[in-house]
Length: 402
Image (cartoon, rainbow, N blue to C red; front, top):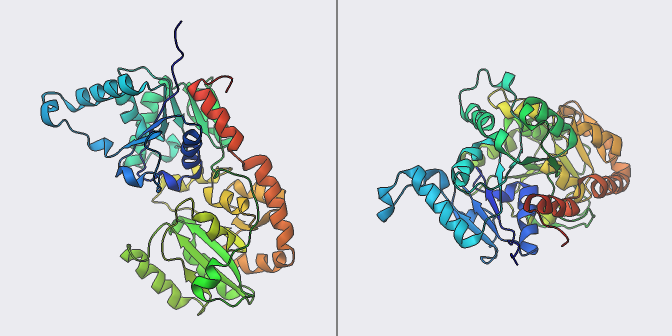
């Protein structure tokens, strides 16, 4: 009697660090917890891919894949032949059963790996590219879109964050009209809860009664961080801003300079910068040390992804999802459709501009526990991914009856 092949997922990422994408990181850890092997290809150093040591029996990571070149006796082969033979050898040893590809820039390498294997390929869309917005773009986004057009038709299906984005993706990519799209919000694993900690009070020597509004994520023009910091002068007394960025004050000279310049024009003692990025395991303590979360999105004309794709944010914001998961009330701007569920759920306030944050805080500060409770309820009903991760894994890997 033929023995059923054990599941083994291949994940191809154009991003060197998966720990910055909550749902992807959670999905890999979910497979690890179920003892399902995962082979990951990233363009950086393997030890940086997950930010924390992985079980080598379950997770194997290969780095520098765009720069693969034959070496030793393999120099007799072309790069394409080398990669195909490498994939074939890995398939013989490990029994790969399916492949997941993150965004279009990973599609070319995934198809090269898969050319002689014929694995089902699932496309995990983290952003949507629209042809009419790419007319003037000649950089990596145009190349990303070309990979999509060339390879999407061969994919078995897709993974995306919510139904609105699925509809938009299918409209822009008619070849996906009849393909399954699995919905997985960009959240961390686990349910929502509120636990108060004092990390920032201890770190910055804040008075006990001080309340903290937290901004996490990238320090970019499209996220309006400068305007958020400058708005602090109109906030109620007793509130401070803490910026927890993906950058390090010790390792990034440009970021250090930007923070020093910003602190010079902000009210003294009201704006603080967390010194270093956090791992996914460290992030909950940071979130638990705040009283409110801030997330603003705008247009940076140099970034294609800050336009219509950002407006379809929906359940894609790992930042806001993590705030609500930690029970933080939120303030967002109305640039994206994410503002719709923030307003309707009652977990926060929607404003038009950063200079309106102070007024929003004044309206909210008497009922922070109510906003927190409503956010927790919304997250557990709409954004929690634990059961969905199992469904996605079972569908992709064709696991039945576990």
